[in-house]
Image (cartoon, rainbow, N blue to C red):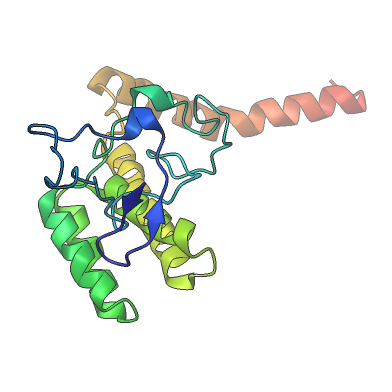
Length: 194
């Protein structure tokens, strides 16, 4: 059993996911073993993939959405950069403020961590499926992450070599001047008059 430090909710973890306590074993009357706490801001609730936050079947050994082998995943593997985490904590404290959402997305974009930002919004959505702001945040991170790819693709269009440009101009000129004559010939031959 682990206890959330923020809300006090207790959750069960699989034995493989629990961390062994450090230090000497407690003796009679000694301190209780350390309990590993889960940060609900960066770790999904039970029943969700720790990487992509897709619903997880209890007996599943891997995620059907992203392919993650659950045995290979450790708590904290997908922790966002500290700057993004600080902005996320500030956002969760003022969740209903649009400016705070915009600020968080700016911080995540500047840190090249839009995937981590989207994951954080999906964690929030997994905890509260009716949260419209979390859903909008997921959509915003997808749009922001895909926009540079489209723009970069446009910028990287290959330039034609000078010889290819000359050939292209000759082909266009030939079409402009010879096209009507070829079209007239085809039409006349179809009508039967050579």
